[in-house]
Amino acid sequence: MRILLAAVALLFALPGMAGAQSFTLKPGDTLSITVLEDENLNRSVLVRPDGKISLPLAGTIDAEGRTPEEVQQAILSRLATDFITPPTVSVALQSLGPANQLEEAQEASEDFEGVLEEEAERIGQVFVIGIVNSPGALQIEPGRRLTVLQALAMAGGPGVFAARKRIQVRRLTETGEEVFFFNYDDVEDGDVAVEPLVLVDGDVIVVPERGLFE
Image 1 (tube, rainbow, N blue to C red):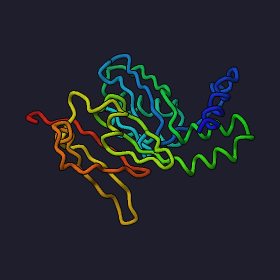
Image 2: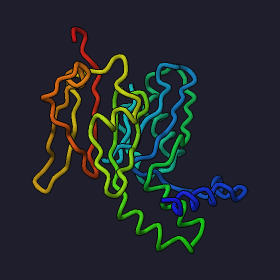
Image 3: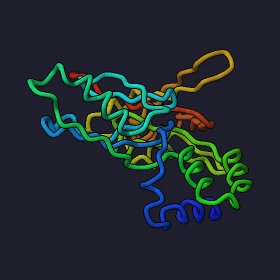
């Protein structure tokens, strides 16, 4: 892991190297979206495992394989009909997900290629999206067990408007998608009967927004 981080640090230490290279978005990357005419649309969004992002008014947009500039144009096109004049949209890369971190490090130095491939095979990742304080991708280190409660803690915990009793863990299996439900309030209240749910590579924790009467 230290070698992996060193490779990433080397990339950004080289003057102009990171800015000059064109890259495309991958699941796990986080984007900062700003709409000058409506600050309510400003937010950080995670590129989900399905390669998409969601934004109010604009809806669901394909992001994987596109550059931030292409995503920006897609959002602008979607929002144009909701404004009298085309809005001023800015899309910036806020943080790289594990997949793009590896790719950027490989481009920085071929000497690290073998090590990075080995790390990519060993490191798992889960995603936390929805009403949490810090949505994004979390790494599962080799030999480490990561529970839903731990992942939520690493994501800053459920937000003020989260439906804490309806947290979902969505897992892709060979037979389809399985959905597990997690009640954060039970754990917070000290319910010892709550079994810890251990996450596996690729799990997505969804923290929905609570309803009006929840």
